[in-house]
Structures are given as C-alpha cells and as structure tokens.
Image (cartoon, rainbow, N blue to C red; front, side, top):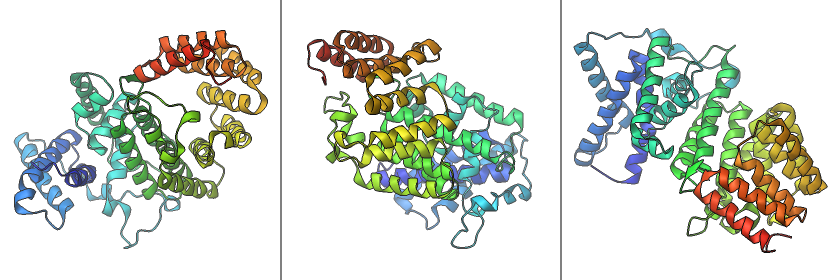
Length: 419
C-alpha cells in the first residue's frame, strides 16, 4: 500500500465527494460510508500497480456504487432516492457562478454532506466526530487520539450520529432558505471547535494537534469556496489562517509554550497572514461584520505588528467592543479585559475580571485565573500574580500550559516577570 503523502491527500480530498455522491443517489449514510472505505482500499491496492485513472473521483464512485448496491441487495434494503433531491441548490445570492456553468450539486456534494453531519438533530459531540470522519476523512482511531478518548468511545459517538441521521430521516440536501443562516452557523461553529482543539489542545502532552487544525482549515476553505459571498465563512477561514500562521513560533524544541509577546515573529507564516488579511478585507466589504470577521480582524492586527510593542491595542479594543455587541459571552469579555488593560491600565482590566468571577460562568476555567495573573503582574502585585498563575496551573488539563503557568509563577515570585 503506498505511503506517498500526495496519494493520501488525494484520497482524503476525494472521500467526502464520493460519499456525498453515494448518499445523494442511494441514501443509507452508514452503508454508503462503508462502501467508500472499501473503494478507498481498492484504490490503495490497485492504483500503484495499474496506474491512477484519469477520473479518479469517477472511478471511486463506480467502485463504491458496486459495493453499496451489492450490500443493499443482500440486505433487501436498497432504496434509491429520487433525482429531484440532487436539484437542491443554494440560494442564488450566496453562490458564485461556476466557471463551466455547472451547478454546485453537479460538481461536489461535500457542502451538502457537511450540512448533514452538522444537523441540529445531532449532539455537538456527534457533529464534530461525524464531520471529521465523513467529511474530513479521518479514521475513528485518528479522531479518538486527537480528542484523547478510547477508540471504542469515539466509535460509539459516530455510531450514534449515524443512527440519529437514519431515524430522524434527515434529507440529503441543503437546508431551505429560511433555515440556511442558522444551519450555516452550526457548520461554522463545528469547524471552529475542531480548529481550536487542534491549535490549543484542551488536554494531554502536546500543545497542538496539527492534523486537526489543518483539517479545519481545509474544510473552512471548502465552505468559503462554495459560499464566496457569505462574510462569516470568509471570516472564519481568515481567523484560522491568521491564527495558524503563528504555529511554528508557539513552541520551543522541547514542546514548551511560548507566549505571544515572546514569539519570534520572523517564524510566522507570512503567506498565511497575507491570505488571511485578504479574506478579512473580502468579508468586511460584504456588510456589517459578524463574530468570526471581528475575531479575524483582531488576529490581523496582532499579525501585522512587527514587534509585540508595536501592537495597535486601541484598534483591538475597538474590535472587542464591537464583538461584545454581536456575540457577548464570558470568553469574549475576558479577552476584552486584556485589551482594556493594555489601553487603560491593568486596574481597569482587573475590574472586568472581578465582574466575571462574580458572574460565575467561567468558574473552574483556568483561563480566568491565568488572565488575572497576567493583569496582576502588569499591576506590579507579584505575590498575587504568582498565586493566580498557580491556581490556573492546577485547573488546566494541558501539560504544556500547566508547565508554562508554573514557570510563570516562579519567575514572578523571583522578580523575573515582565515588571
């Protein structure tokens, strides 16, 4: 079986397209996915010896169809969907006309498949798992390793999601126009969750799980390509690109975390930064910014600063003020408090953190104590800052973050902090 990375990338890219085609034509999500896996295995065995077919996607679809129809006949469960399902297309105002004049549904069913996997009838855990399995092409074992759960647990999540699709009769089509904005928001949120888990793992020995963040970027790019006039799709892609651009500078050779202020910015990926800024500009031109566009704009301001000291904090503060109006939540407010402290002083930021502590919605979250420690350090209260850092270290389940916070506490206590 070949190990060529380009071969694996091709199969991973084609897998959701083939699955989408089979589900659109035949239904039976579970059986269709099994058929796709068999087709991929056949390709891995045959193509190295016989050569890759000119139409690799068509070859996989034909093999998958044979496997699927054989399976359905043997189970007396073959049910073809009407061709009318395939005519479901996006509202014209969201679509860019394809270069060759074909409809989106004639080119690729990946977007429809993504909406299906992110259907609100499924639990958030099932949405993420099914998206990575069916659309991302990751194996159950890979997804389980990424989220640090047993493979059997992840298999159960995926199985429950498939069963829910079957029992709920979720149709293989894009949502009606009236439901489209809310359903798109779910899709973007799932991709956002996947990216965040990949960029900063919530637990375990590694700070980053690059396979997850890269897969989220790939899928976000696919959504933006399908929906070039949807600003939040462009905003999410921009946010991912601008954030991921710092990946190489976030850790030392030993895997330890490097804070934004201390990163070697020459190691940032300037190509991704330029592309991310382009998508921010595209999104801002489409109308009033939504939460992903505003977060991307904040990331762009950070990435455009040649040095940390050059960061335009008043501009960042302005974006956070706008973000609070469109997507108010405790995490946004916590980040807003940092921007307030950088512009108006640490005491102003600490007052916002105190309100969040009284609010209670971030209780038990290490990030609250970590930010409080940072602001106390800025204010010159070394003892209280060290205590806050240690409190945050006790709460986090990420080993690199815990070590960073413990090191920070020791530096502050020894007088080696920023002030």
